[in-house]
Length: 483
Image (tube, rainbow, N blue to C red):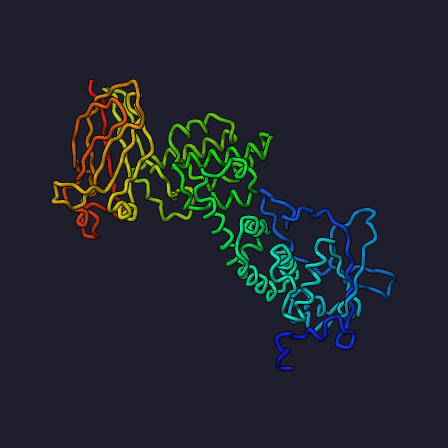
């Protein structure tokens, strides 16, 4: 017997000699989606909580004959169910499942009957049979079939067989993750996804999807439009998307909503559902203005989202809520870093731009990388700020921090711009001017300072330097048009 110890009670499965009850399984045809790639009955905007199975009793066949049912929704004239019968041991099932323990020990007459009826839908049959077998053998036959294992996982959750949930999760984690596989996992009921035993599988699926679509701009539009709600939600929750700005993320979500929801009210509902995971505070001001005047959201919702984003931009330090639990205030890995801008028309056209860079991003500049800000406009010309690590001759070949004002496109407008660059300084945390200049911009060109702080790179980036406040470098550029 020692060599067979891992089989548990497999010898007793459906064996009348080791059983004290008869399980009658009534199988009816349901409306489950038959697409082989589907596991659940589709996505839902609302988080419909999975209903725990209740132990309900129904009289069948007369006063003295009662059976226990696990029921499904009834129709007025249901077709006759197909029936399977199994000899079961109430002790074995009760030991594995709180559901069966309650069923067999609730003190009611039904708990003493020898016949128990479960009523399930046809698509659940294979999974329930695997589950019942597992409670005897501690194993399943479909050890490498993702779809089959996920169905067993769903059945184990419904019948509260925790050991089977852990077992299925372990088997699924051993199967190489693919895109269809990850999407199947993320389509599981939310309460199941959040179960402790399933969390490692959920995390693996999310990680795969995020890494697969990390640069969403390189994928065909048709592929992104075909993603389910769970896929879009996973991407929106990621802080690691490599996009130029949050504008790009919003355009993808808006296009997806229009492709999947042709009715305006439904589209507004799904966009509102996604809104807590869209980083509106890091969108450009022109895009926010467009949202405010569009019908993407109900007017009251659009006002709230845009107003909150603009208030965030008006505060002096963008990353001040970086540790917030609200994902709207957490930056993604933007190619063009968010900025705050203040524009003046009188007494002359002037623009003040604030750019905040975390220390870790500045570390990544060494030895010769660059960081670009979002675009901003002055006098009809499009500009960005460019921060970089330079190797210059002024410091005997040492690296230094550089900051430049750069035009983005060749234009017909020729501008002469006065500019000065400042940084916040310890201990006062006031902005201190580090460089002034005046340049004429006629095309795509950059003007600025190769060594903004007049110090070698190691001194600039060091923990003891005055340049980083709470590990953030706060930069300001003041630009004005020379008349």
